[in-house]
Figure 1 (cartoon, rainbow, N blue to C red):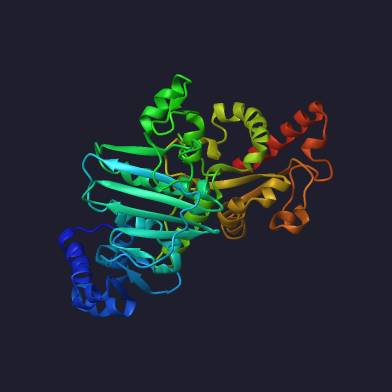
Figure 2 (tube, one colour):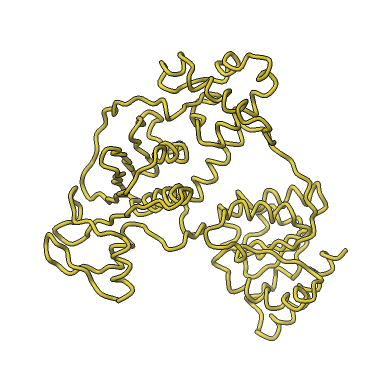
Length: 415
């Protein structure tokens, strides 16, 4: 949808944010209230689209355990709620800004709202997240131009990695934003304390390039730089298959957004081969790519797999686009493939639906012994006998089988 008159959309949004009842309720509002707020004839037929607009631009979010109830973080209470924090063995991280734009924490709260503890521990300048017996406290100090993070619990590194990834995505939307990421020291004196020595990440990376340790200015101990960066959960590139918490957050966030949105259906030409595989079986993907390469070079087939996703790209959107364009789906089936929650939740459902309703051809390749009979792919014809998976064959017979599999893929793609 394209809004030709931005003032119309802006005016509608501010009718919500300036509403006296919404303000007095600290930013909380319901779908029924929106019907009252947008009762004018110019909004009456567009209420769902306007709500989508607010959700998309992170101006509000739906409370996960209260359907059709929303909150605008800009109107949250200024007062920090009461809660108890375990200060033992925390992971700590800090962002310091030369100039701190407004709205960084607000956007973070919207992105992470599904994990807000009890959906109550959130205020104008802070939030407490809880996931898998792990808690994270994120507090913004505007006057000091900094955001402080501390994490406590069983899966500290994983949760901190998700948090830093979300902040990095937000930071990248600001041009020439100057800030420092400060990493806590993990020497014996600093580890687990609430006031450790802090090192700028860019300095640590220079030491890492030189393969040199760094000295703590509190204990004067020499500290391994790689362990500092690893403990903070900082990654040079975000691997969507490396962090189950991040994948789960993305999935939950998408489902929550979809519940409040009218799907937009686009007509996409299906002319591509989509390869679905477990990252535990990457070697088999490479072998299949090698045998398909002559056909790809000649232009007789077009193949897509997730190795084509560029670093920093919206990987979920790229996968969805490729799924929508798939004419043939090649499944490299192993027990790791069948056990993958990501494949089960995100790749198989649209492929199986397209096979049932849109003429997509599924070709599955047994690369190792597995319990495929207990899965949804059992009713589809395998491109090779499951009784003799590729892994069980001699190298020569593997190559012969891959040649036949590629012929079947080509025939399906060009039929």
